[in-house]
Amino acid sequence: MDKVLDYIKQYDMIKPGEIIGVACSGGRDSICLLHYLNSIKADLDCEVVAINVDHGIRPTSALDTEFVMQFCKDNQIRAYKFKGEALKVAKEEKLTVEQAARKVRYGVFETVIKKGLVDKIALAHHQNDQAETVLLNIIRGAGLNGARGMEPVRDGIYIRPLLNTPREEIMSYIDEYSLEYVEDETNQDTTYARNYIRNIIMPALRKQFKAVDKNIVNFSKICATDDDYINSQIDLGLLIETKDYTKIPLTYFYQNESIINRVLMRVLARFTHQDIERKHLKMIREFAVEANNGSTINLPMKIKVSKEYEYITIGQFKKKNLEGEHVFKKGRTILDGYGTIRILESKVRTEPKLHQHIIDATKMPAGAVWRYRKEGDIFSPLNMGGTKKLKDYFIDKKVPQRMRDNIPVLAVGNRILLIADIEISDELKVTDDTVRFYKINYEKDLI
Image (cartoon, rainbow, N blue to C red; front, top):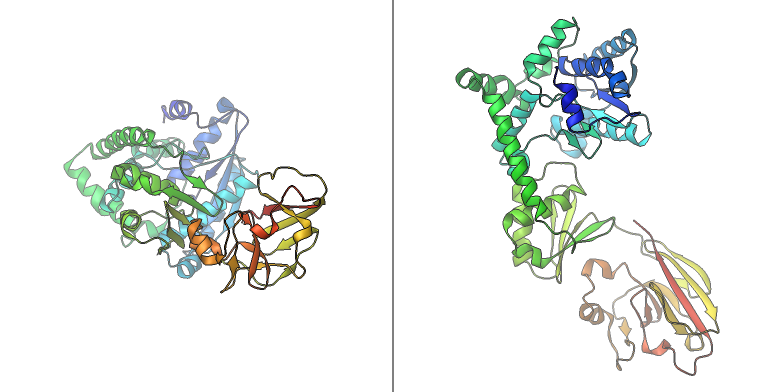
């Protein structure tokens, strides 16, 4: 344990004045980490608190929480406890118990961070855990990203001070300070993948290869170095991101597979915390090259992938309420599922700004309404001459199919006068003779 403080400083894990929440189950590793960080908090100029999460999996888990709370009371450590329902989450979201427990746990961590109760979360993973993780990832078919294992610092929030510390040193520390801890009986259940690796595979490997843990960890560090280099070659500058989706140019899919896989993993990580499988990456790559424009596929993580002209769009698209009509009027009009349209009348001619249309107010026909597109709509594009179906106009303008139903139009009957934030009809265009103007501003909801 002598080198742990150096490891913390090497990766700048803890800054002066920070509150460090130690994820403490009451087990040997987390008790060791909590006790150790609390003993050096003056050296680091930080505060240490305990975060206990009862996943609700075992009947005895409440007793473990009581143990942690008493340990913290005895050592004058502030503590927070939380109760989750991992079994319920697993059933409702069709996850394994391990996945559900992780989701519950990290949901708590995110909550305490957002509420400002702590600045960072310290996790008690050690060197042997790292070796098990790397081996498990390889068995599951991971690439370099999985073979690099766990990071000392992730997202600037999650820190692992013991990641370079062998289990033997943790056990010696426990003995040195006569620290009590609890044993989770499910740790012996080898139906869980990690327990099978920990209790069956790794002991057999250690018996034959004495330095197996250290060698696997060294291998993971080599993988991390190579992975970092490949990632440094990725250009994300051409990606288009909104809150709901990311658009990837099709040209990306003709790059080296190592590059596009990493681009996809970064994009998918925006929308899911679940592990991303190689088969999903292959599915998207093949879809991008082979699928017809307008095609869509669904991934298991409630993610949709669409091919839209020169782009592959990946995201989670919510169904919007797009019903009803709104009479054209000056002032503010709110369209559910789109945003706000503001209309001002003016006698001064100016050039349109971004997200603004300017039309001839004297040419606005009676009975015009804001609505969404319908079958049979027709449109006369500005300065183009003639009329075409609105559907054909959208195709010509390469408006993605999934977006066409979400764009408001100003219409009289089936005659489209204006397509919100895209184009006005030739019927409403401003000329040198125009004396009154409507300035139409579009403010889209960030949903």
